[in-house]
Amino acid sequence: MDQKQDINALLLQVMAHDLLAPLTAIKWQTELLAHPKAKKEKHAAYVAQMQESTRIGISITKHAHVAGSVLVGSYAPQPNTALLSSHVRTVLSDLIPQYERHGITLELAVDDDCGERSFDPQLIGLFLWSLAKYMLTCVPAQQTVSIRAIAPEHVEDAYSIVVMCATVPEAAVCVESFDAVNMRGAYDQAFVFSSLLKKVAPLVDATVHAAQQDGGIVLQANVRGAAVQ
Image 1: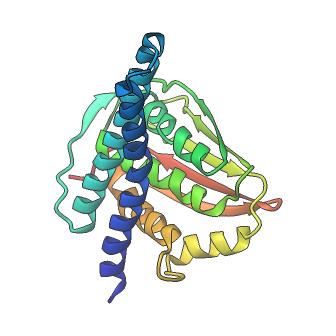
Image 2 (image 1 turned 135 degrees about the vertical axis):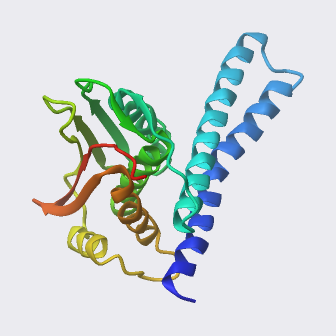
């Protein structure tokens, strides 16, 4: 099996694993809601939890659909004009519960963009999701990952996204793997997300690189957002 086949198979495994959590949560929340002894005052909370789990499941499924299309070369760009910062905030917020399931805190600080720009929401979403998920493959439990999205002074300049974790035991290995984009083992999630990042970056007019910093990792992405036609 070559690497192109491997990434398609691995992507399916990763997405199936990611979807288990929200689907399982919906199952339990539904059972709690349907229980004859369920207190009526808790119904609203159960419904809200179901809605949140459903939203996250839909988000993951959309990323899977776009990723599959990109990998086989069939994706058609769908640019839109809007504030990039609003979309960045929404996409990254969906990652907070995924980080929490791994015992990791995700802190977000997103600057408002200085003006609207043209970008493909689905491709940008896949790029941001892959960026955050790559860091998740490197960071052990009980750590904190911070993501800072920094708006430029001029809308024609790149919007910067910095993902940092101060303590990563195998920081050198992670950075080397990110640069080489080589598989390590049969279920290498880092390979999936680094491959997706490298594949999507030119489609959203972005650059991305990884570096070690004092025992931790910094991922730096600069995004202009224009979809390549």
